[in-house]
Image (cartoon, rainbow, N blue to C red; front, top):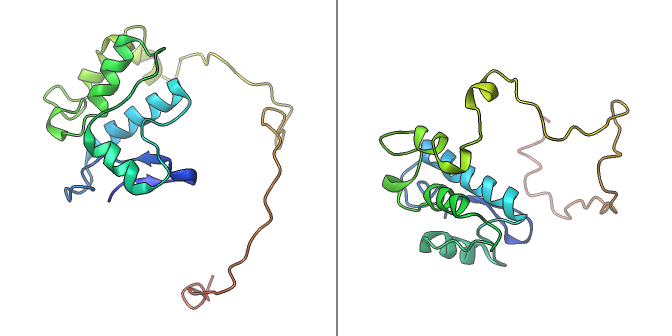
Length: 159
């Protein structure tokens, strides 16, 4: 089927080349960039459902729904990164990465400053030292569950 699925059936990415038997290439990375940008802007992934097969069906349909707060430039970029047809996906076209770097959504991005690692972070959390977890929410940890059957015990005997 291609792609990786996390907790609650969230799609962690599918570049579609592997799901259609095409193997891995850079087009998968551009798909993953689209998923990452979408999730950072929306707060949730572009494709999600309770069952992995439902997520797969949403991906191959080629239809992406956008929150109302997404700008037209962001929607355009994401439509071109989350393009199911590899021959039409940004980053995989004749101009390569320049289709992405020169896109209107990145108009204020200084790629040279980023390349030289001179970009200033918009937010730098305060850190008291190694192990400081003040910037993370507290949560109740689930107890460690050990499998009742150790089906792979022989495979990991030397670990």
